[in-house]
Length: 388
Ligand code: APR
Image (cartoon, rainbow, N blue to C red; front, side, top):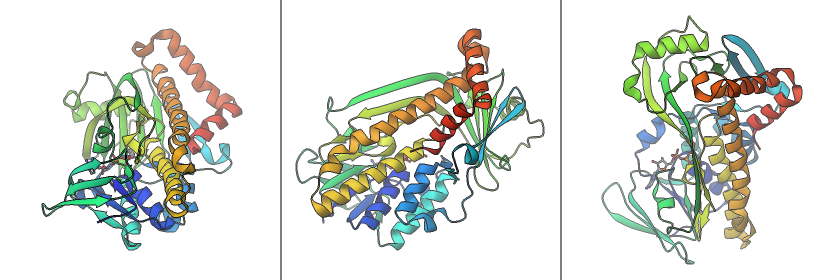
């Protein structure tokens, strides 16, 4: 069996790439380790930025993928209970994003891919990549029925997340990795609580908290905690009490908690995002903290760059885009890493004085204040939120 591109992983990166290649007339097969039900239910990100939405529009996928999805109107930053607003539509000249829970995007991408005749295989075990530094790589896996299969291809797209097999298949020393631990803990809670009117971040002396919409009936909350704390340290009572206090929202109802975990506030980048015939896409190549909501958008941006490059290489024999893939993606990756770090530092230093000390707390408050007193500062922020 053979195809032009084997895509490993069916998260946002792999499914976006699969759809774009289908549109580009480039044959591909998507191999996903987990079951269809697992992939469909996995809840994580919730904001498609303006640049990400543009990609689906440009490829003619917006009608299927973004129908009925509300726009991302703005952000409230509540400082010690005082509401402050940033209106992204106004500040960015209408370049707003969309509020779409990741699992809805994933389901729609799966639907579009399969309706278009795409080849999507779940329950693919023991995926292994071979011959990446030659001209004829191939991918082996064990299918759901236990049969070992091999697919020859021209290129492999590693879209299998941070712990996938793709990056691990690259020989030691071929890639430079950069990683950073932000030194703060975050607890995230998904609950059946009506969403806030607009996405909300709160800066308070007890620490950072956030309340984001996840569809019409659900919310995702974030709570800064000590780096060493785990889920076991947080009972439901403490969670709701801390959320009410930090968010300045005494009436916040305690809904059913459907998921709770500790988020690693860590950043990671690999350079180059390529080894021979293997291209790393999305979380396989980089991790950004959830702050700023850029993880899923970076994955979609990488997929767009790679789809254009592979279309030129496979259909026209033009290897320029493929050669430039890593450098083009890394410019955006580092820009978003900086945005995420900047936002993290400002919203955490400004809150709990134990985190950064009194001097840095005052600096962070000045930075925050600038967003509401300087139109230029607010527009620069909105421009990064819109992405590009
Ligand atoms: N073989 C096949 N599939 C694999 C393997 C493997 N060895 N290892 C992992 N996978 C699959 C996972 O099951 C998952 O479906 O690859 C997929 C990777 O998906 P994500 O981890 O979501 O990564 P990505 O598609 O890059 O998503 C990017 O979306 O919500 C955000 O936090 C997420 O920032 C991330 C972004």
